[in-house]
Image 1 (cartoon, rainbow, N blue to C red):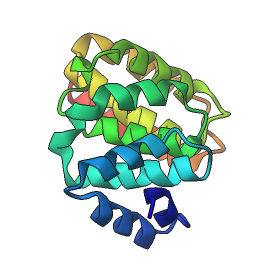
Image 2: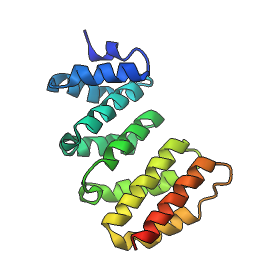
Image 3: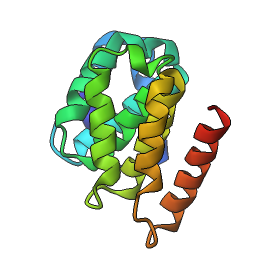
Length: 172
Protein backbone atom coordinates (compact mmCIF):
# COMPACT_ATOMS: atom_id res chain seq x y z
CA UNK A 1 0.00 0.00 0.00
CA UNK A 2 1.38 3.40 -0.94
CA UNK A 3 1.16 6.41 1.33
CA UNK A 4 -0.73 8.25 -1.40
CA UNK A 5 -3.66 5.84 -1.00
CA UNK A 6 -4.14 7.05 2.59
CA UNK A 7 -4.76 10.60 1.36
CA UNK A 8 -8.23 9.92 0.01
CA UNK A 9 -9.66 13.18 1.42
CA UNK A 10 -8.62 16.30 3.33
CA UNK A 11 -10.26 15.55 6.67
CA UNK A 12 -8.54 15.93 10.02
CA UNK A 13 -9.03 12.21 10.65
CA UNK A 14 -7.12 11.34 7.46
CA UNK A 15 -4.33 13.75 8.44
CA UNK A 16 -4.04 12.10 11.86
CA UNK A 17 -3.99 8.64 10.25
CA UNK A 18 -1.26 9.89 7.93
CA UNK A 19 0.85 11.19 10.82
CA UNK A 20 0.39 7.93 12.77
CA UNK A 21 1.43 5.98 9.67
CA UNK A 22 4.70 7.86 9.14
CA UNK A 23 5.75 8.04 12.79
CA UNK A 24 8.95 6.08 13.24
CA UNK A 25 9.09 5.12 9.56
CA UNK A 26 11.57 7.39 7.79
CA UNK A 27 10.88 5.86 4.38
CA UNK A 28 7.15 6.66 4.68
CA UNK A 29 7.93 10.17 5.86
CA UNK A 30 10.13 10.63 2.78
CA UNK A 31 7.25 9.42 0.60
CA UNK A 32 4.83 11.81 2.29
CA UNK A 33 7.27 14.67 1.90
CA UNK A 34 7.83 13.84 -1.77
CA UNK A 35 4.05 13.86 -2.32
CA UNK A 36 4.05 17.55 -1.36
CA UNK A 37 5.46 18.10 -4.86
CA UNK A 38 2.72 16.02 -6.49
CA UNK A 39 -0.36 17.43 -8.20
CA UNK A 40 -3.27 18.97 -6.32
CA UNK A 41 -5.05 17.66 -4.22
CA UNK A 42 -2.44 15.12 -3.11
CA UNK A 43 0.26 17.77 -2.65
CA UNK A 44 -1.99 19.77 -0.33
CA UNK A 45 -3.06 16.70 1.64
CA UNK A 46 0.51 15.46 2.01
CA UNK A 47 1.71 18.91 3.07
CA UNK A 48 -0.91 18.97 5.79
CA UNK A 49 0.24 15.58 7.07
CA UNK A 50 3.84 16.83 7.07
CA UNK A 51 2.74 20.00 8.88
CA UNK A 52 0.97 18.05 11.62
CA UNK A 53 3.96 15.70 11.91
CA UNK A 54 6.30 18.66 12.46
CA UNK A 55 3.90 20.23 14.93
CA UNK A 56 4.18 17.00 16.91
CA UNK A 57 7.97 16.69 16.39
CA UNK A 58 9.27 20.26 15.96
CA UNK A 59 12.90 19.30 16.59
CA UNK A 60 12.92 17.43 13.28
CA UNK A 61 12.12 20.54 11.24
CA UNK A 62 15.75 21.59 10.88
CA UNK A 63 16.51 18.33 9.03
CA UNK A 64 14.08 19.36 6.28
CA UNK A 65 14.04 23.16 6.47
CA UNK A 66 16.05 23.59 3.25
CA UNK A 67 13.73 21.28 1.27
CA UNK A 68 10.64 22.91 2.77
CA UNK A 69 11.88 26.35 1.84
CA UNK A 70 12.94 25.27 -1.65
CA UNK A 71 9.48 23.82 -2.35
CA UNK A 72 7.68 26.79 -0.77
CA UNK A 73 9.47 29.17 -3.12
CA UNK A 74 8.26 27.33 -6.24
CA UNK A 75 4.91 25.73 -5.40
CA UNK A 76 1.72 27.10 -6.90
CA UNK A 77 -0.54 25.08 -4.57
CA UNK A 78 -2.04 27.32 -1.89
CA UNK A 79 -2.47 24.45 0.58
CA UNK A 80 1.22 23.58 0.34
CA UNK A 81 2.18 27.24 0.83
CA UNK A 82 -0.07 27.47 3.88
CA UNK A 83 1.28 24.31 5.50
CA UNK A 84 4.92 25.07 4.74
CA UNK A 85 4.65 28.63 6.05
CA UNK A 86 3.18 27.23 9.24
CA UNK A 87 6.02 24.69 9.51
CA UNK A 88 8.68 27.35 9.00
CA UNK A 89 7.08 29.47 11.69
CA UNK A 90 7.89 26.63 14.11
CA UNK A 91 11.63 26.91 13.39
CA UNK A 92 13.51 28.13 16.46
CA UNK A 93 15.31 30.88 14.48
CA UNK A 94 13.91 31.66 11.06
CA UNK A 95 16.68 34.15 10.33
CA UNK A 96 19.29 31.34 10.48
CA UNK A 97 17.70 29.36 7.65
CA UNK A 98 19.56 29.10 4.41
CA UNK A 99 17.75 31.41 1.96
CA UNK A 100 15.98 33.26 4.79
CA UNK A 101 16.26 36.45 2.73
CA UNK A 102 14.31 34.83 -0.10
CA UNK A 103 11.66 33.74 2.41
CA UNK A 104 11.43 37.29 3.77
CA UNK A 105 11.02 38.67 0.24
CA UNK A 106 8.40 36.06 -0.65
CA UNK A 107 6.43 36.77 2.53
CA UNK A 108 6.39 40.49 1.75
CA UNK A 109 5.36 39.79 -1.85
CA UNK A 110 2.57 37.41 -0.85
CA UNK A 111 1.38 39.74 1.90
CA UNK A 112 0.99 42.57 -0.61
CA UNK A 113 -0.75 40.40 -3.21
CA UNK A 114 -4.53 40.36 -3.12
CA UNK A 115 -4.33 37.23 -5.31
CA UNK A 116 -3.00 35.20 -2.40
CA UNK A 117 -5.48 33.48 -0.07
CA UNK A 118 -6.12 35.09 3.30
CA UNK A 119 -4.51 32.17 5.17
CA UNK A 120 -1.25 32.46 3.20
CA UNK A 121 -1.16 36.20 3.84
CA UNK A 122 -1.91 35.67 7.54
CA UNK A 123 0.94 33.18 7.96
CA UNK A 124 3.20 35.62 6.11
CA UNK A 125 2.36 38.23 8.74
CA UNK A 126 3.29 35.78 11.50
CA UNK A 127 6.61 34.99 9.82
CA UNK A 128 7.37 38.66 9.19
CA UNK A 129 6.82 39.46 12.87
CA UNK A 130 9.12 36.57 13.76
CA UNK A 131 11.75 37.96 11.36
CA UNK A 132 11.42 41.38 12.97
CA UNK A 133 11.79 39.97 16.46
CA UNK A 134 14.90 38.05 15.46
CA UNK A 135 16.41 40.90 13.42
CA UNK A 136 15.36 44.23 14.98
CA UNK A 137 16.69 46.24 12.01
CA UNK A 138 13.77 44.82 9.98
CA UNK A 139 11.04 46.07 12.33
CA UNK A 140 10.56 49.46 10.70
CA UNK A 141 10.28 48.06 7.16
CA UNK A 142 7.93 45.27 8.22
CA UNK A 143 5.81 47.64 10.28
CA UNK A 144 5.45 49.97 7.27
CA UNK A 145 4.49 47.07 5.02
CA UNK A 146 1.79 45.90 7.41
CA UNK A 147 0.48 49.41 8.14
CA UNK A 148 0.03 50.17 4.44
CA UNK A 149 -2.02 47.13 3.50
CA UNK A 150 -5.46 47.94 2.07
CA UNK A 151 -7.55 45.56 4.18
CA UNK A 152 -11.03 47.01 4.43
CA UNK A 153 -12.66 43.98 2.82
CA UNK A 154 -10.75 41.44 4.97
CA UNK A 155 -11.72 41.83 8.65
CA UNK A 156 -9.79 38.73 9.77
CA UNK A 157 -6.60 39.88 8.08
CA UNK A 158 -7.12 43.40 9.45
CA UNK A 159 -7.30 41.97 12.97
CA UNK A 160 -4.13 39.90 12.33
CA UNK A 161 -2.35 43.06 11.19
CA UNK A 162 -3.43 45.00 14.30
CA UNK A 163 -2.14 42.19 16.52
CA UNK A 164 1.14 42.07 14.60
CA UNK A 165 1.60 45.84 14.82
CA UNK A 166 0.99 45.78 18.58
CA UNK A 167 3.59 43.03 18.89
CA UNK A 168 6.12 45.00 16.82
CA UNK A 169 5.54 48.17 18.84
CA UNK A 170 5.71 46.39 22.21
CA UNK A 171 8.93 44.62 21.27
CA UNK A 172 10.65 47.80 20.03
